[in-house]
Image 1 (cartoon, one colour):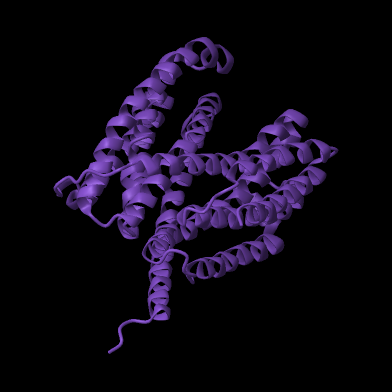
Image 2 (cartoon, rainbow, N blue to C red):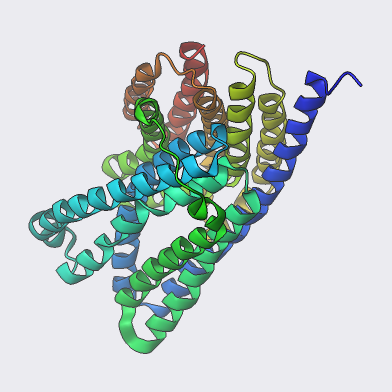
Length: 412
């Protein structure tokens, strides 16, 4: 009679968040499973030397994550607050044109760097490097459609798109390697998987691209992209620097032991990402409809994240040796002895990522430049705590909690 109360609306948002989180958790779980199977099969089908080349190329792919995550977050923000399909159509088409031009520019620069730097330093065939560089085309285009799916809260379609990419990559990569294309087959299979996912993303958004275009003002979106990309850089660099610095500080064997524990612990961060992805468009939409209003979405996200992180802590506490053996195929006491410190670090980083994305979703990120300070603190602590990998892991854990507390204080 008197309409829907604000609490009723917030509860509705909470239910949407719960449904979206579950869909994305399942989607990301299947996506990561197929990616793991791909790596598992390639490690057994390729020679050790060829797999080393493949692993190196994939490491370069991971550097593109900043572009992918940043672009998808910016587009998701716009899509969550603009309900007109015509405006989304206009944004997507303009973004595609600019991203394709940018991708070709990056590819040209990459081709030159590959010839003069990567080819002699990494000892990888130049033609293979060029084929790998084509990833720039999909890395700057696919996030646009996925950002719209995320912003429109089409979590099932987004999950299905992720699964399509990893499944196609696995199947096509294996087929091409069996046919004798070796590393070329694995790389081409990866690119074809991304291309197929891009095509299917257009199908999932056919209503958007069929809508009559409405001109939109994107100046504010460009301003919004600056803190988005910087915060994305901080998060990705923070959980990547520890392995790179460990390789510089320790012997290859010790660094390898740390890397095994580090990669294993990062499953906590990767596995909890669906929660922040589901929260982002909902909190953005809620703030746009009721500026300055309090929302239960962040609280719900914190509860869900706490449950997953706690489950991970319990699992690693009781089964660290078994998990390291399952992951590495051998008993490594040194890795098992430090994995709990690193899981705690990834738990703290997961909460940091959640809080920062929430601030981005409501467009309240004054002071974001100061987050760069915490990268410097991380590097300093890692060098200070470098007598052994146990101290090193503790240093990384301390820096992770400093980032969590510091980012919350700065962005208040």
